[in-house]
Structure formats: C-alpha cells, structure tokens
Amino acid sequence: MSLRKAGLWAARLAVLVLVAPALVIALYRVVPPPVTPLMLIRLVEGYGLHKDWTSLDGIAPDLQRAVIASEDGKFCQHHGFDWDALDNAVERLQSGRGRLLGGSTISMQTSKNLLLWPGRTFLRKGVEAYLTIWLEALLPKKRILELYLNVIEFGPGIYGAEAAAQRFFGIPAARLSRVQAARLAAVLPSPLEWRADAPGPYVRSRTGVIAARLGTIALGPDGPCPEQAAALMPPLSGLWRGR
Image 1: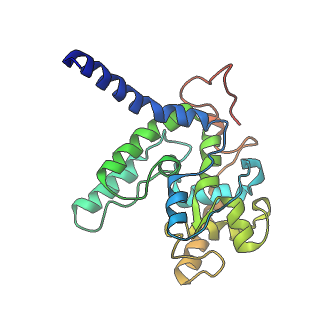
Image 2: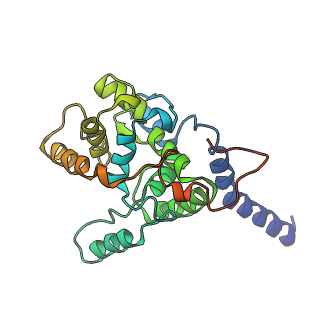
Image 3: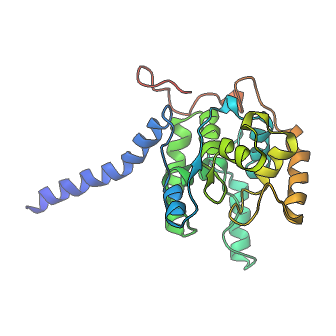
C-alpha cells in the first residue's frame, strides 16, 4: 500500500472514530440504550443486572429535582460543563487537598455512563468531555435527564429510577415520596457502598440537605429547563422526534 493510500485510510478511520459517538448519541435520542459498559462490567463482577426503562413522565418529579439538587444545581444553566465547579476541583487537586473530584455535571455523568468505562484517568475524562459536547448538541435537556435517570447506578447491579424504587421501596418510580427521592439521590456518589433502604448517618444527613433544596428546583409542565427545551443543534427533522 502506498503512503498516500495509507494516509487516506488513516484519515477515514480518524473521521469514523470522531463521528461514531455522535451517531450513537443521536440514536439514543429516540431509542433506549439496551445496555451500558458499566452494566456489563458489573455483571462480570457478579452484581447482576436489574433495570426497567421508564419515561421521564413515569418518574416522580421529586426525584428529578433531587438529582439536579444533588448532582448538578446548574443543569439548566450550562451547556454540559459547570466551569466554576471544575475550577474548584482543579484547585483542590493542585493544592494537594484531594483527587480530581467534583465538577461532573449530569450531562457529563450521562455521557460516561452511556458509553464509557469506569475510571478517573485524564484520558477518560477527555473522552467524556468530547462526548458531552455531542450530547448537549444533539439532545434536549429533558432527554438527557431521562437517559440519566434510566442508566445511573443506584446500587449493586441496580440501574435507573424504576429498578431502584422497586428494589429499595417496593413501589414504582412515579410514587416516590420526597424523602425517598432525596435518599436515592443521596447514594449516587457511592452506590456500591451506600444503601437507600438502610442509610447510615452520612446518607441520612445528606438526604436532609437534598430534601431541603427540592423547592429551589423548578420543573415546567414538559420537564426540566423549559427555556432549553431544544438541543443546541437543529432537531433531526424527518428522521427522529425527541421523546
């Protein structure tokens, strides 16, 4: 193979690698993801796989508010990245006060949980940021939150609001109370260690803080962020309709 042909193939491969994630994300605008890398990893680790897709309308508004209050208070104001939180996280790392933690928005967590492996390397963070740009460009906020609440890990082998509500409280996600919703949101930072149905002192304290913040999170009749109902890019007219 000539050098010129090799260069052309390399360029095509690079374009494919860059564009393929966008095609998958665009597909998830209307199709529920069948499985995620984390689900497969946990399954191999012996945690099982329990999930039950439900639309955002089937998830209690208090849980929608709770995850925003807990994980990303500026969800409706940013386009994927909370730069103030990221600056604070980097400052803590540089000052030796901890690892690169915090600053991860719901959009970033959704990108990570949909398409990536667990880990905290700079490489994975870079890929996560790239995917987040596509996610925010192609999907409306309502769909991002819907995906998040269906793939996020709430416990060992338990993914999504419906499976978590059934497993921990024996009720559908639509019937979660204010406290139950806050408790589910409280365990998100460490779902393999903390339990929503048997909370320790820290989770109980965190639950109280989240519950107190619920009133500060507004939801419109069509879900969160009514002023950002559309994605940044034009809708995929004639191909798909957002859910």
